[in-house]
Length: 399
Image (cartoon, rainbow, N blue to C red):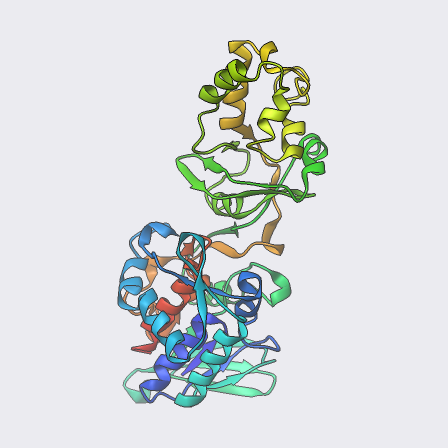
């Protein structure tokens, strides 16, 4: 069998197929296996999450991922990590990271491949994929993969080539082209888990906040995330922004609560009574970064510069307006930074044409699609790696 893609999903599939005694070749056009594994989590690899469920994934078929995630769970992968004695730790919201380096995860996967005899071929570009029918063999067919170093044939072909995110990591549309070649539909693709860019006027006003991070609740449509927002030279980033970007549609505004869990309309009158001569910016600087306070009170948001206004000078109407602005700050991004910095690709091979148990094509027996190339996209926090492990494992049981 042949697997195209030496990333998380492809290596997991190779391990499982090899354990079953299958002869496995993994082909990848990159010069290193698992490049996205190595760069993920700031080099520490957020390899899974303690809380995994279908609600953490986006797909036109929201039920598709359930089978794979329930058959190979986060606990199964954690067991592999522990068996290899890789130290790890938990961060916020159940995210699990390597203590030392993402290299530990990649070494583990490659060691497992070596143990089961699965071979990984790098710098291997693919010129063409085709299906060869053998009428004399009961009508069965094989797949031919043509490379500059020669042609390969196999009964099974697994596409684990990933999506379009982060082109510098050798991302390509190869998997989508193979899917279309064999009659599969592709759900529209777009950048997911990606920073926002801003319109020129907002960028000019907020650019000086680059580096400022604040706890927030970010909303777009019916979706909301309680995670930090980071201001950048180009726009907005941080976990809350990356999460909501997968649900945001171009042209829409999003709302940011800069004071989640705090009732500003209850706080301001109390401070006014206790400290009438203290300036408003001093009060707000106790609960928000100073640079952010200065920008929010500069007159653009409230129609007047009230940075130096003492608390006694605030009318109930102005306090209400200020509270509304800070709890429900609406801003319309100009777009996203695109695939260049996106962590994942939304959309992909249509799930309705794949088996949810095996990842096999319903159109072409012996053809499988796993990982990011499929129309299943996880949240930030280890979910996309778990989809790679789970979908790769499922295909590896039968391929």
